Image (cartoon, rainbow, N blue to C red):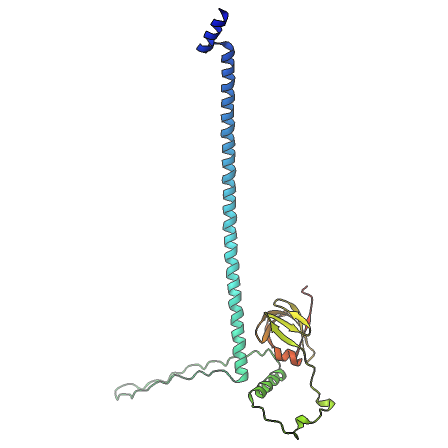
Length: 251
């Protein structure tokens, strides 16, 4: 009889033990829901903070890249401008510069009633000043070399002085091995590349601290560390010993 009453209470949900367990389960359920909501809010806040932080970092990196690209373009344009100016100077020195011909204008006859034209007195442009990077002796030596290359070679006769043995006073100067391969300079059994620190020595026993700024097809460009001016050094000058290159420490 007592068992039947308990079963009846169990079905009706009025059993005291059953009600305690249901209440406990309901509390655990609510606690888990609250913890899950708090965890979701925490994770959402953390993701939003990381998003804002990464967005600011990406914007800063973008601005830095823009500034770096602009500076690189300006430096490249300045480099090309200086190279063009130096090539123009070299052409003027060798006499290969192109002269600009004046534009021919046709003058019409003045009518009898027209006023006499007033002559246009304009200031003559000041002559351009050339800053020579080489000494007069080096320039004359280069010009003589160019003239020898342009003049046709005559066949030497057996009695010509070329077939006579050279005396010690007529022995050729010391020559150095110099060539350019894959954008690098091979000189005196050593390789030199762009941005390498060197010493540049000349026949006048001058020693200049320089940095190789670029390596061309038949020449190199060096920049003086004292005043940042640039010089062009040809392979022929290195081979003849007009200029001598020595390595130096970058520090």
